[in-house]
Image 1 (cartoon, rainbow, N blue to C red):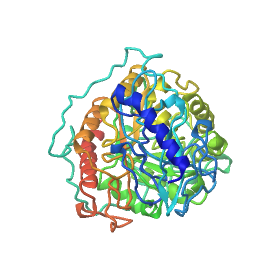
Image 2: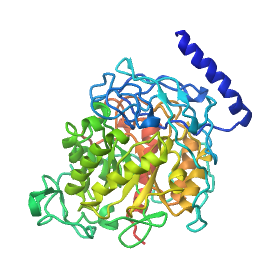
Image 3: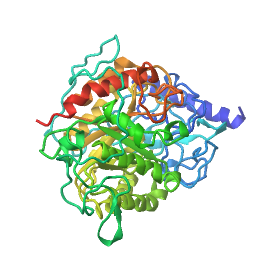
Image 4: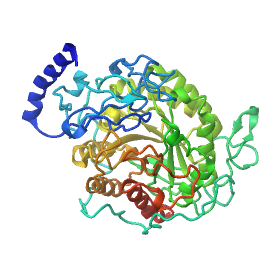
Length: 528
């Protein structure tokens, strides 16, 4: 440890004094456990920032430590696990403890307010080389004020917190985690219902594998009817009405599923039609979030499209997740989503997430979103777009005070990790957003700590699930991978293609998460 580091630590200790006087939890922590397979490092519970290669966030490629407040983030481990960025996403670096979101600014445990751009120590080791420290940026929280209105309402959960593990509230009991021999998911069956209204459709409505050529020679994915009895077959085209996501009949729909994992082969191995088919048919995932790192936008495109095509064939929804973001990526992201919406926008299955876990002020994030939305809407007028919010998708209320108004069918993103982010610290921000008439979707969450490891907190996770279900907020769990972390749902020797049994699932994470998703599936297939 050099003298410069000692000086920073002493300054941090002096800065902690006002925090200790105020009390409460720190809500400025990154909920990101994603990394390239390096050591987990750090313990958020003690206020230390774990070392993490982090999410792809606003970045300048290869800088290894630019300030997120100016739209940049440190370089990431990239495709091979080596340190530094390869043309794209940046690391979100260290992760601190959880805490309460309060109006008028959030104070971190290092003593610095969010608007001040406090520096968190750490930086996760990626392939043995640190990805560098991280600044929190200037998220400029506005608190619960600003545009909130009483209409729409928020249902508060009953607060049930069973101590004996997590139980899925509502719905059928599921399959108990046992997997039957699922289909490969490559067929693209037709069936009835679920066709997308509006937009252009390709000729014929043939299977999703390979697609067909529509007017002008542009290749588009399958636009035929979704298989009957599937989530898309039942609900069809989704849209946002007020603070709810509703189906083709105007009924609220709450989707539960999994997030894939693009950081290493331990997750990429599952980007195939067979695995998607088993996730849909055996594990009852109604939706998959499909990340692609910006530096993999070309090399990883075929595996991304393999998952999207299989999701369409199996009648489930899929979110295209640009696992990065930032002003430096705005043009690249807009081009990418323009291409993806041209190919997949006529399918009701597909939705978009242009920026994963922003760490800069909402004004910067909003400008980026508006540019990417324009590129998507040029081809796809109505599929839902999920908008990332400041402070690692933890402050949707800042967006609620100044929402994007250039398009409809927009929802705002929240991320949490239950062992680091208790519901009590975030419920106010979510409630404010819902009361402002904006919809929310949780595109990433876990029962563990924010670094992907730590204790699996079943009691706190149940509080979150109860609250989300009571307010018709869907969620996708992190993550479909085998890297040995607490957040992995599969053991290290699980098949890349499936089928799987409960013996292939980690415990308690994998078994608890899949049991919950299965418990919600029967309700998902019901359209009142």
